[in-house]
Length: 161
Image (cartoon, rainbow, N blue to C red):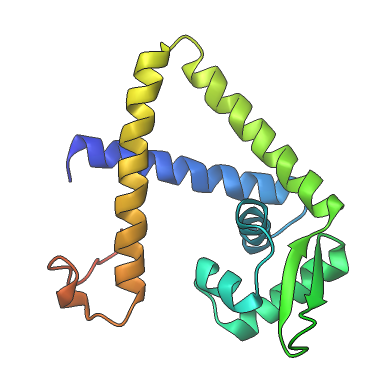
């Protein structure tokens, strides 16, 4: 793996570590924190859509939604046109909680890059955007109906990525 790829992986790992620490600090599980983040950034979602974002089954997200509704962080509203469907959305308390986590995150990023010129920030942002798009596309392909051999020669990853 290239030095650059290792640095990107380290950045991802640091973000995951932050997510775990934030979740623990506010008394959530990492899965609940991730779900709140998806609802914050993506707006109200069906459990099926949220399950896809979290890479869980619908049944797993039902239990997750139950816990978050009980905690007062999420509402579950039935669609008027099809009462079998529900929509999950953040409550004001859920929004405040996740916003607090993102505010601390943003402050840490600003502290790290505080003296960096806007030109360098713009260039790094563009590179990070390209990496994000590429990784999301690869994740979608890997999560799809393709065989491992069909995904850029990917066959296995002993010990994880």
